[in-house]
Every structure is written in C-alpha cells, then in structure tokens.
Image (cartoon, rainbow, N blue to C red; front, side):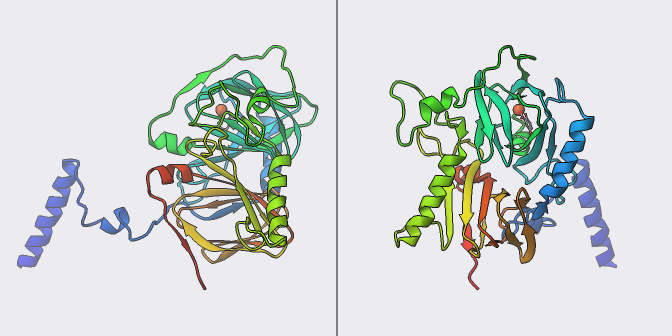
Length: 354
Ligand code: GTQ
Ligand code: FE2
C-alpha cells in the first residue's frame, strides 16, 4: 500500500533530520510560535511561615563563607524543572545571616537588590560604602559592584534577594570574582555615602557622574516609600489625581540620574491597597515576583485564589492573569523583568473586563 510506504519514507526522513542535527518547524509550530505566551513557569505562592523556619534551620546547619558565598535559599518555580528560578528570568531567594556573621565580598555580572521584610543590624558594603539594611528598605548591588554583608548584632537577620541570574545564565554572560575575605574596621553609618550624594528628592550633584545604567543611589529608605504611597491615597481622598487606581497607590523605584529603572534588567515597585481595594485583573508580557510587606489579602492567578499574609511571595509568569484583593491594608513589593521586555519592544498588556 502506497500510504504505508509514504509513512515509512517520512519516518526515515525525520530520522535523517535527527542524524544531521535538524528539526522541522511544522511538527512543533504551536509550541515554538504560540498565539499568546505559554509559560512553562507556574503561578505560585510561597508562605513566609514555611520559608522562614527553613532558613533558620539552614542558619543552624550551614556555615556561610568563601565558596558557597551566601546562605541564600531560592524560590524554585514548580514549572521550571527543579531549577532555582522563580521565573524564567528572575532569581528570588531568602538570605539568612546569623548573629555576628559575615558573607564575604564578591562581585558578578548579575544585578542584585535586597528588600528587607524585617529586622536590622546588617550593613551591606557596596564598593566600599557601608549601607544599613532595615525593614522596608530597598538596597542595590548593581552588576560588578563588590558587595559583602555584615551582621553587627546578636540577632539573625533575613531578607529577600532578587537577581537576574536566570537571564544572565541563558545569555551565557556570567562572570564572577572573589573580593577581600575579611573586611577590617567596618564602619556602620546611618546613611551611606551614596545616599548623602544622591538621596535628596529632585536634586542631583553637579560634577559627579552617576550611572545611567543602574542607579547610583544604593538605598531607597522605607520612610520615603511609605510617605509617597500615603500621599497618593491622601490626594485621591481630596479629589486630586495621582493614584494608580481606586484605593491603589504605587511607586516605581527610579534612577535619580534619568528616571529609568534602578537596574538594567529588573524593575522594582511598591504598591499599597486600601482595605477592601481590588487591583483589577490584568495580563502583561513580563514575569514578576511579589512579596507581601504588610497586611493580608489574596492573589487571584488565572482564576485560582491564593490567600497571602505578611512575607508571602508570589511568582507571576508572563501573560498570567493577576487580580489582587486587599483584606486589611495591603503593602506589596514587586520586582519584574519589565526593563528587558520594554527595551526589546516585546511589552504588551491587557486589562480583563468582566
Ligand atoms: O548576596 O551577593 O541570593 O551573589 C544570590 C547570589 C545573593 C549576594 C543571592 C548572590 C547573593
Ligand atoms: Fe552577590
């Protein structure tokens, strides 16, 4: 029969494709070029009440030092095959530093930030500038800046790390270098040199070059973030425009040099929802990780509701439908790969109207 002949001919063709390192488009077109994004990553929530005790156990069992470098425990997205990736582009980890511990200095081509949920007493030294870490602060360690972390207290401290490790990995652009093992004479100023230079609203120093690629301001303090969010909601109450949506205030952390995102590959934002407020469902090209800074509420991800509380983390894949509901006042930190998506002109978004 001719049909059987054709099938075996076709099978032989596919085998020969394989032997020659070839694959056809026509058998995989839908996977390779879907109509809309089909992320392998899942929408997923991690509970702080699960994470934190595990970090404490790691603190008791695992030393921090040269080689391993950091006691950082990464969120592994269940859709991403056991990789320590929160989304295809973003690393998110809980880093735990015990009483009086030091994480040694190093630098790398990956960009990093820390966001502090609770505690204080750690100074992160960024290219020789000690930066205090406290609740609500966003601290930056841009690509190739040396950084080491020093806990000056008798209490442990934990925080959220965000890096572009997966993205830099896919691009085969990883570089890494050890710094000085031990730092002598750590000073512990309240404000870093970077803040004294760059941390005045709307004022930039004349004659000092600041990077346009990543923000020269290595710390964004909670008092400023909090005041900015509070003012937006107050203005809305007074009938003036300014809020991101009904009962919703939001800010983007920006480079004081040019208003760009603080890191070339990572956008960081803080959101505040009033009690009972809803951020309506939407999708966007760009993957994100959210952390509940304060309050409680729920994320409705592709129609599935997950309750969230202080410290909980949520990964949202690209094009995932996301609705956020506040119970009491809900403060949320978010980071995403939006700067990369936008620079490549791949950004799209959709509001879901019901
Ligand atoms: O604190 O320098 O979570 O280099 C992953 C890689 C933290 C850090 C991480 C790092 C760091
Ligand atoms: Fe690092």
